[in-house]
Each structure stands twice: as C-alpha cells, then as structure tokens.
Length: 640
Ligand SMILES: Cc1ncc(C[n+]2csc(CCOP(=O)(O)OP(=O)(O)O)c2C)c(N)n1
Ligand SMILES: CC(=O)[C@@H](O)[C@H](O)COP(=O)(O)O
Ligand SMILES: [Mg+2]
Image (cartoon, rainbow, N blue to C red):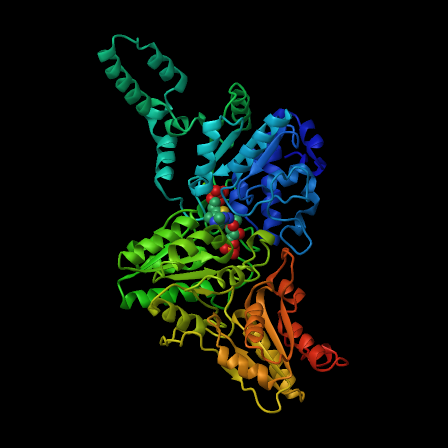
C-alpha cells in the first residue's frame, strides 16, 4: 500500500493523487477510519460505506463552490478527512474536538450543519433557487441515505424540487439499512430497483422503444398511451422518481469511483433535478461491521481484532429498563402497542419487539407520523406507547399539540435521551423538552430519578387517562435495577426525600437525573452542619404546588436543579408558581443550562461543566449558604 493519506491536508493535495491510485487511497482511508473510531467511537459502519462516494464527489467537484450537503452527516468522515481535518481525527466527538457531523464554522466545505435527518434535499433546493436568482456558479449535490429518505421532509423537498425543476443532484446512498433494517414501501421499491433483473435493461433503450410507438387515431391512441404507461412502469428504472420530475440514474456501484464519476458527468447533461441511485454496503471492508451494521452504526471504543466493545457495560440503561418494563406490562395487557421512528434498539423497543414483534410499529424516520399514528392507535382502542429521543420529538411539536393534547388523547410518549447526551453534540442534546412541553395543556410530564421510578412512571403513564410524557436520560440508570412490582404514582405528587424542618437553611428541589447528585450534595451538607432539605419533584407538570409552597415558606434558600435549559423549564415553573401566589420569596438559585447550545463531550464532563453533578450542586449550595466555604473541601476525595 502507498502512503497517500499522510500527504493529504486538503482538497488540493487530494486532487494531486493520480486517478489510478484512488483505490489505494480508499483502502488507507478505511484503515484510518477503523483505527481512529476504535479509539474515539463514532459512526463507523455508515462511514465505511461512503469512502469511495465522498472521494468521487470531491475528485470530480470543486468544493466549496460546488456544494455537497450530507444528510444527517453521520457518514461524512471521509469528506472531513479530505477537506483538511485528517490530523484532528483523534479528537472526533470529544470535548473541544471536531464534530461527528458537518458543522458550520468547522470548515467552509461543511455547507449545512446537520445531525437530524432528511434535511438535505430542502437545503439543496434553497441553494439552487438562490444560485439561480443571484446567477451564482456551482453544482449542488445532496447525499441522502435510504433511511433518511423515509423522513417526511425528504418527500416534501422531492415534491417541490421536481415541480420547480430545481437544478440539483440528489445522491441516494442506498445500503438497505437505516440504523436497523430500513422499513417502508419506498424501501421495498428500492430493493426491486436493485435486484429485479428486468430493471437492469438499459433505460435509454426502453425509452427509445416507447417513443417509437406511433401516435395514431384518437381511440387507438388511448390504448397506445395505456400500453406505453404499462411498458414504462414495467421497464423504466426509477419511474417513481421520474414521476416526481427527477431524472433517475442508476443503480450505480457506490464503491466504484470511476463509475460514480461517469454518472456525475452524465448528470450534467440534465438541467433539472437528477436522482443518482448509488448502492453501497454499510460497514464495507471491516467484517464485524459488515456482519453487524446496526451494532457498528454508532459505536463506542472497540477492539479492532474482533469488534468487541472496550467499555464494559455493568449497569442497565434507561432504555433497557423501559423496554423490559414495557414488555412486562404488555404481558398483562394485550392492548399495549409500541411505536418507534427508526430507533428500535436505541429506545429499547427492540426488547419489546423480541417478545411482541407484531405489536411494535417501526414507521421509519417519521417522528411526526409516529406521534399522530399513535393518536390513531389510541382512538382505535389500543394503548399506544411511542418512544422517541427527546431531540427528535422536536420534529413533531405540532403533532403533540394538535393531535395529542388538544384532543386529550390517552397515550404515552416516552422521551429517551433527554438531557445532556454527550458526544453527538449540539444537534442531539435533549435539553429543551421541559420548556416546549410544559406550556401545553392536558399533558402530564414526569421524569424518573432511577430505574425503580422509571418502572413506576411507565406504569402510571400507561394507566393514566390522557396524554402522559416521561423523559429519561441516555445511558446507565442511577442506583440499581431490578424488575419490581409496578406501583402507581399519584399524578403531580412530589416526594420529600429529606424533610423541610424548622431549622432548614436550604431546600434543593430536583427532578429526574439531577435527584441523585442533589441527594449526594444534600447529605454532605447535612453532615457538615448545613441543614438541607431535598424534594424530588417527580413531575414537571403538574407541579406539587403544596409541597413547593411549603418548602418556600420554610427555607431561606431554595436551589432548583434541572438537566435542561433554564429558559421556560422546571425552575421557571417554580418561579412562576411563587410569583403567582405572591409569596414572600426565599433566596432562589437555579442550576441548569444557560442560553447556549451544549457542545459535545462525555456526558459526565458536560454535566460537570454546567454544575449538574454532585460536586457542582454542592458548590452552588455552599455559595448560597456560606460565601467563604470552598466546595472542594467538603467533597469526599474518592467519591464523585
Ligand atoms: C429526525 C431524526 N430521526 C432519527 C435520527 C436517528 N438516525 C440517525 S442516522 C439514522 C439512520 C439513517 O439511515 P440512512 O440515511 O440510510 O443512513 P445509513 O446509516 O444507512 O448510512 C437514524 C434513524 C436522526 N438523526 N434524525
Ligand atoms: C446519527 C444519529 O442521529 C444517531 O446515530 C445517534 O448518534 C444515536 O445516538 P445514540 O448513540 O444515543 O443512540
Ligand atoms: Mg441506509
């Protein structure tokens, strides 16, 4: 193997590589990806699949004048390497390091900041319209996966782009996979395009033949036109896209740079939108990833020899507790059904599906549809439990208001990955849900502090007659996990973990993931003579007004902690309550996320940055109580 990669510090260097050496470079890039992601973690399988595609695009195009927009962006590592970021790859997804996604500001070649799916065709469409109006130069390419094409926005954009004949090229990167196997009618259609031998007939030949059929007399012409249509539907590849106004080219071997470039050239002959159907293999070149593309979709540090993960998981995750609890509930109630928007494993719904495959609906990357379809399931008499990552529920905000809350529909929304998510960075943090859900009438909103509470809250939500939302964090549960007997929690009832007493100096009010660290801080404070009470609010809506008002009346200081933005969230709700009751307010301090996007880093690291760990809570409590005391001196040395 040559040593081409070491010389590549940007596109100029890349373009100097001889065409007949590109395959050697591709092999080097694959090795580089595997070695680096084995250390940092990242989206390995998707990136192994797009090495040649990214190379072909950058070899042929002239970025950034020509614009490449990566959908989701989790497959754009080769693009990052070629555009001058090779030597930062050891910082991928780490605090202050390069992002795992294209990110504006990181490079002029990252045209769109991404992380959520199905945005690329819309962005390309806008760029094409701007280019036309401003008479600017440059080709516009959107690269979208077959999974991301299941998202509604992608269809909205195809619809518009085809109609206005936007001058864009859409590369459909078809690897037959979303994170899990891809789903949906479109996915079935793509399978046919890839595999059915009759579609292999040269498209131009068929079109030529159809056009040869003479146009004659009106009665005959109707029949001829029907025959033409039938022929067209039988033989023309990509007719669905053609009907949308796109020129379809493909299927194209996405691991053959020469073939890719040949088709890019061919696309230039058309002035309107072109869809290039590129077939790739997820995980290409690394056997463990080829065999298990879902495991290697997003992976933590791993051992290259066998693909085994480096960090041992000794504790259950919230998603696992959710999946197992839902399965236990479903065993007792056959009306319970699950809904996921392309995240069965991420949300723990795969556990439910193992037991009840016919009761889980994976709708693809379609959060809006998932929420409204859950409404339909509920109205039809079932108990729908729809699990979505907090960040992706942002897509379905109107559906929550319009289709769920206004109609007071009896369903459960389980928001996974709520709060700080870590290495995915700004686009994936689930730090807005308290604020965007709290103003919505009829919703009940709760957040478990640990595995026990998650079990009880799920049980409570499923039995509650109306829309109930529970939100819980990414990763391991606080405390231990044992499947337990379910207990219903009284809606809106907080729990006083350390009682407010006459001598209480400070009351900490926490919710969800912040309760355990708050408890640790409160214990240290009490052990050091600072009388501290602790309330686990459990609910963000409705609040336990009685308990909070009592705490406010009985404490000189209140510290409110939430893993969420401060604007409009849990602490805002408490401030509003105290204000509306015209209570003489105690001194109040709020801990949460200030008005900024949370950047990437390990979850613990980021929590510490916002003082949301035990140490940070203790520090802030002491600052309220005793300006001169240092938190460091109280925090036990070995215990974090
Ligand atoms: C709105 C939204 N929902 C869910 C996700 C989670 N997600 C990230 S990548 C992915 C699968 C994408 O599949 P595809 O586009 O085919 O790319 P591949 O992973 O196959 O390369 C999903 C579901 C997301 N990023 N955005
Ligand atoms: C690209 C994307 O959106 C997902 O792959 C995401 O990175 C998954 O995050 P989790 O690792 O938290 O499931
Ligand atoms: Mg795919």
